[in-house]
Amino acid sequence: MNILVLGSGGRENALAWKLAQSPRCDTLLTAPGNGGSTNALDLDPLDFEGLAKAIQTHNIQLLVIGPEQPLAHGLVDYLKQRTDLGPLKVVGPSQKAALLESSKDFAKGFMNRNNIPTAEHKTITAETLVEGFRFIDQLQAPYVLKADGLAGGKGVLILSTADEAKRELSLMLNPQKNRSEASKVLIETFLHGMECSVFVLTNGTDYVLLPTAKDYKRVGEGDTGLNTGGMGVVAPWPHTSPEFLNEVAQTIVEPTLKGMAKEGQPYTGFLYVGLMVVQGKPYVIEYNCRMGDPETQAVMPLIKSDLIPWLEAAAAGPWPTGTLEWNSGVASTVVLCSKGYPGSYETGLPLRLPESDSALVFQAGTRKTETQLLSQGGRVLAVTGLGETLPEALQQAYEYLDALNWSGGFYRRDIGYEWLNNESR
Ligand code: AMP
Ligand code: GLY
Image (cartoon, rainbow, N blue to C red; front, top):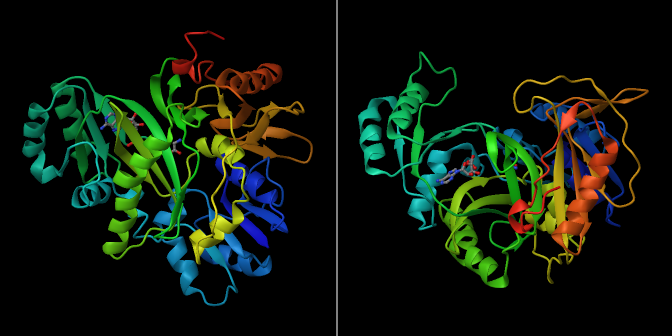
């Protein structure tokens, strides 16, 4: 079959890498892709008509949607209405199901209605600001404020005093001072625990769990500095056990799928559940309606089975018998960023990638000219090492990045630090 992966990041290159290995795959295309993509189509993921045309032209039978924006804008609904696209299968949730990511207010209400464990919260608007102040006074520091709506990881503030929290809350809801569109802000209790990401692939009723992961979101070593899209990954999350996965399935995944179906919006496609594990008990911090980036770059190499039958089933159809097998061992991903990221940075800097027979190199913010490869974004490469142990996996990734020695960028040298007995690199 011909497969199109929509998106332009390292996540999409990792999906394409995995799917191209399947004997079921004839041609793998990406749109718009990046410097590391083969068969890239020059298409904006929000140009639904252009996309439908490309699906016809290239006789695409399976479309895998990488990023959240086209999902939140209703791409799956649009393509389902088009009866002229042949036997197309689309992996991703409907616009209404994607509200689990695109509206934090919806997600919180949904979790409360369905008894899914999550931090206590209150949703505040400009009219109910005083109620927000009162709620802050009832909570203990630190304070978590989240703008409703898609914010690309930048909508969350964690503040250490009640005064700061009140000031920021007022600013976020003040239309004169705030240029973003947050008309609602959520105040949440802060959960102290360990973060873990769980990935689900589902047709709305049946589901399978993919390898878990731990993402490093802060730009600085020791988890300091600004939040980013993700600086590195360890997969599986080192505390994953059959009992833990069973608890996540029973208390979170199944109530989520049943709740969405009951509310008339069955959830299909990839579901990424961001958890805080507090004394062994998982709480949902956020849902995302897609795979994580850079988690996918560590998760895909850990999947042993052919993913295509599971994607087809998640798009439309009967669930495969058998299990989705994971490889043993560990994957770790380290992200090479442009200097300055997540603030402003230069683009157009040349990169020369060494050959590697050990590390997997997934390009992200790159573009190819006729003669060279150039940097194009904040997160430039995601380099994944595989090993029987975490130190072995990390060594592969770091050896590659050390050899590349790119003067335009930087990377965190402490990915996996919690599990390395304070070894420094
Ligand atoms: P989000 O965009 O919802 O994933 O939040 C970004 C980051 O903020 C998360 O990865 C957590 O590290 C942190 N965070 C969000 N909500 C909470 C919470 N209720 N308690 C503790 N940390 C949180
Ligand atoms: N790595 C975090 C995300 O994809 O949202």
